[in-house]
Amino acid sequence: MSESLSRTPLYKNHLALSARMVPFAGYEMPVQYQGVIEETKACRKTGGLFDVSHMGQFVLKGKNVLPLLQELVTNQLNKVAIGQAQYNFLCNERGGVIDDIIVYHRAENEVFLCVNASNRKADWDWLTSHLGAQLDFQDLSEQTALIAIQGPESQSVLMKIAPDGDWDRLNYYWAKETSICDIPVFVSRTGYTGEDGFELYVPSEKASELWNALLEEGKTRGIQPCGLGARDSLRLEMGYPLHGHELSPDITPLQAGLTWAVKLDTVPQFIGREALLKERSEGPQIQLKPLVIQDKRIARQGYEIANLNKQIVGTITSGTFSPHCGSPIALGFVQKEDSQNSQYLVKVRTDWIPAQSTSLPFVPSRVRKNTK
Amino acid sequence: MASVPNGLRYTKEHEWVLMEDNIATIGITDFAQESLGDVTYIQLPKEGETIGKNDPFGVVESVKAVSDLYAPVSGRVAEVNQPLLDAPELVNQDPYTDGWMVKVELKDISDIEDLMEAKEYKEYIEEQG
Image (cartoon, rainbow over all chains, first blue to last red; front, side, top):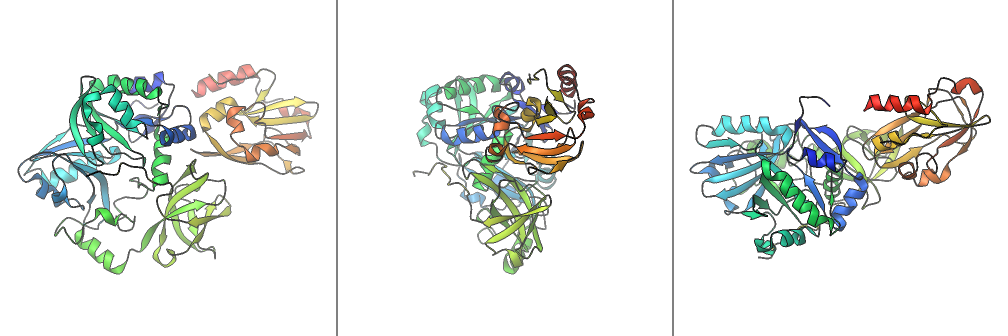
């Protein structure tokens, strides 16, 4: 592999588990260990352990950090209590998505951001160019590893290896500083699989130790290490967007059907708001369509979508085989005029194959339902 | 390490050929199935169709990628592994036995002469990493 690729602190752990490594967002990442389908199933049945250390982390500190950051993000930050997290978009003036990020209100006058690896530089430049004078910025990406444990057995694993963690009281999209096996971790009840689970931010030098502790206890409960292949299938089964596919600087959250994280009515000002207000009143020109493919072949990114008259009306952005649907599934954008059809055709090589429009998620979500 | 049985012939596109009289049984190698990952779809020619050496004759699709199958020999398709079309995962489980794809009646036996022997193919995939 190219020498310019970075490695996560868990690189050797992956090799020891015979992972197949692939380049992804500038990193050598495990795409699979035992097989994408097996890992995808294991995660929903018992659980999966994921290295997502390629993700970037920034800390922003300073007085009025929330109202200042609000000028750059679409969701409503004044609703985020200390200890809570919120999904957000960083939009450009056109309402296009520079990145989708999680904002953690970690302490008074302090936020912690988790950003996509491939957008880390763009995010940093955008954030610092707008807020660099008012806030103190730190990029913690290199010194921070991120391990996700996802699936129904996740909480049992944490309860076993960190019995004092009071895990049952940590709600969805809440996070806390704690320690597991004497390792300092920032634990968040979030994920990208649609299962209950946790994401653990850990100092890089302690990542391997934490990974091994989670894996050892997890194995006894059927939890498997999962690669990026399973991660992609799991997120697609939920219809979660992936930046570079369903989101980009040329795609707005409204087009991608993610209006729930865009608070046009309650947040008076943020970059992109004017464009998004206009788009909302006119109706987006393209709309995201979840499709169940009625064939064995996978509809992949870039494949054309047509109406039943074989007129091209859109493009696939993501596709995979869903073990839980038992068929290929896909996401794609179609033009407004054809966005209400129930049936489409997708061009796979030389053939047109039928695709049924459906609603998200493809597989029911089982994320933690907050108790309070 | 991918398995490379002796007695078969191999192509650079990672197909294997078993010769019995003038019938060539064709499949993809263990190295190929490992690289592809979980196979979800296989498209093969129908019985009686003719395939031409080095031409695409089918498609293997995995969760990760779509690959053409290239004919290692020319001839008439005498038999297709029908169970494989319904259970493409057989290619991952048993690439050299249950995962065979087609049997082809060769026009010209010398078609196999330029195919690699097991030893050569092993070296070839080591170079491929």
